[in-house]
Image 1 (cartoon, rainbow, N blue to C red):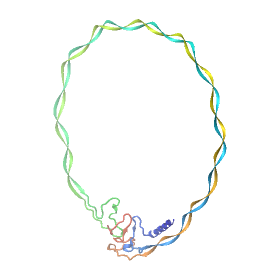
Image 2: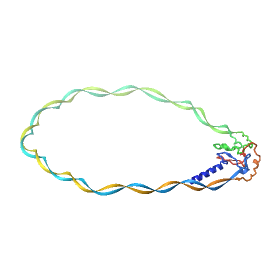
Image 3: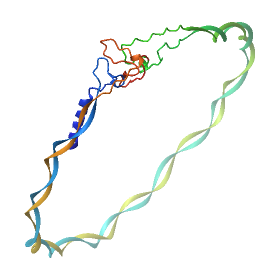
Image 4: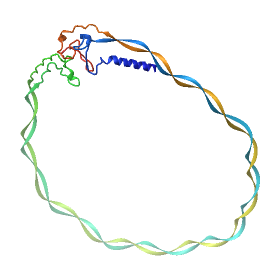
Length: 394
């Protein structure tokens, strides 16, 4: 807290004593150190800084200890006798019925399979050979003279004129204008800061520089080679084809179908009835003595374990919680006012030294009521981002 108060006091004092001479972004200001005082301005004054002790009261947080009371649960274990239920086992008899198999011999009639021979009739298809007269188709080659027409192509070459295009390089004389050099006082620079070159410095009352005359552009004649397209007629050989018809007789062989009657062997299916014998199965009753198993109910007695509850007295540990009051110590922060001594800056005015003589460009004072400072290489300065150096006219 003490450091914050001292810092704020120093910052306020610095702002009070420095706002009169501060310059903004690119703002002009008077410099009285080189040429004495500005025209129509008061004499320049400087300040000396000294520090004095001053008492201030600040609040500080101080850790302090204090006593407090709290309750705590304490576990107390004691032994007590209690009655509990436990499981005990005892034997118990019971009766039950089971089905047991009993095997006896008995005479029964059963069905058995017997085989016997049996005749039957069936029909089969057999192939029989026979001669028959049938008509058979045969092909026969026949040669005849047939008149045919054929065509042939005969080439004919003739001379014809065609127009073709060619590219020719031709020398051509052209005139070019050479741009003049940059005028007097201009740097020829462009961009964001190009307009700052060649401006007046800080003397708004000084006469401007005489403008230079712009030079005349210069015309230069040059010979260059250009490509130009030229058309001309040439004779070329053109081939044309003419079709010539020709008739002649040629032997042509064709195949004709002729039907002839022939006697051939023919296979025909014939149905034939036959008799056969086969085995046939049938059921026959047969008396047999077999073992027959039957289930008979039999009563039996058994023993099994049965569970039951028994009261038993046991000594067990019992835990109880008792509430006990206790005293403790804790650290807390308290705000305490404290008197401290801090350093405070004090500014004292100091008279300025005698002014120095100005150089010759600045000897002539500005006309009244001009309020700007004397320009030249001594007094005029420009602050901010675009600060410059130099004389009256650049």
